[in-house]
Image (cartoon, rainbow, N blue to C red):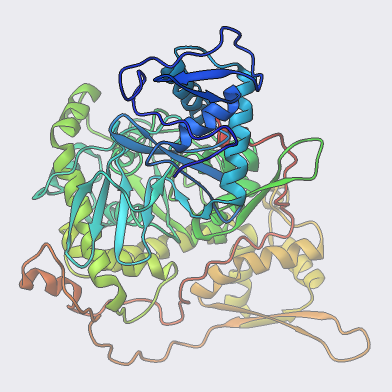
Length: 589
């Protein structure tokens, strides 16, 4: 790209000029428009800001563009590679100042740099092309995934479904941006395996191991929905260490684990500045955070006021992989449980404990092979997921298909992911029912009577008569008929899994009262014989016999489960909007 002003074009090749001459400028460092700059005896007139703009445009790799939200970005060469940064970032401002200093051996004024920065930002918005930028993981729209290694040379890994393998490329066809704290991934190696990973984590159950690998391979998918990995267990069961190790192979960060965010604004900033959201050592999940995590998992925007004094709004609308740790089973609300994979770690025997230095030494030694094996599994999923058919689609169906397509690459038996996922969902459903005193009492009521019908007020009176004082004093106990109806609606999917059907209607007559009817679900009809899941294309890194893992026996599952739904939380009492300050942290790099 070249930029011309009324003073001509400044051609910059090296700090000392194309012929070794030094660019000289006036002694007055102000940003006046009457400066004379001489390059090899040729005079060029222009202000400092104009010279900075010219210097930037002379970069052969310079590009100015904006995304669909009107955010502006600049790509430019640094040493032997190309970098992309927001035009409002400190990094871009420092780059402009460096260009001027290298050309003139003089320091530009802050006003000149700011003026040049504003000019380039305007060109990016009004004259630049519209292009999207990505954080850590991206796709070109076909069966190719790109992962930013976040190394000094800005290399990326290209994972291809058509070739069934990966390679490192220096010139990425998609544009990545980086935020503070992002660390480099291991350099992937071909021919690796995931056995070394299991040897250093405290995941003993084969079903839990299959789910951990499924979450890992899903986290390298460029678009969601993403399941939320919930890790719980006693203190000392290596929960935090497990999450830090898993993150090492997807999105390593200086702060791998973070505390609970204070509000939606903090969560949106964290999601803007990283790929994985990892919240550690939670004691509970508040209703607002539960709903926000649901939106991160399956989609939904965050709208936050940009400044206290204006009506401009910053929108974050994306999906992110999420992992949570805590001693207790944290997810108790049905909509969050629907999106969770729950893994319980067992206490570690004293004889099996290892010092962290030994664990990280083992990870560093085998990190390239582990990461390479994970990328092979992604290539396997890319090649097979479009043609894979499951006999029954569970909740989070996109995740289930993707993880099943990667089974052979992950070294898992055929059907391992779906079998573990179905068991996990059944356990989670039971947890949700046990966490709701209303659901427990309603199930007992309908089981005894076979059916029940009435208004929300009448149901509240019935369950209050069955509950003890401890249950009625609970914070979650509904105090009004409206709260009773809302609690029942939230628990209805979990009760349906337990065999209780809840229906809503209006009574005939003048008052048209809302009626709630609950009954025992009829026994499920025998499922037709389902053929095995079908895939075309096979698995790239396995022999043909191993690829049968994707075309073997059918998977079992509940016949009335819905396909993947990506609706946001339906809690009517939790506002999305949080009045906050500026989101400058997102672009201040």
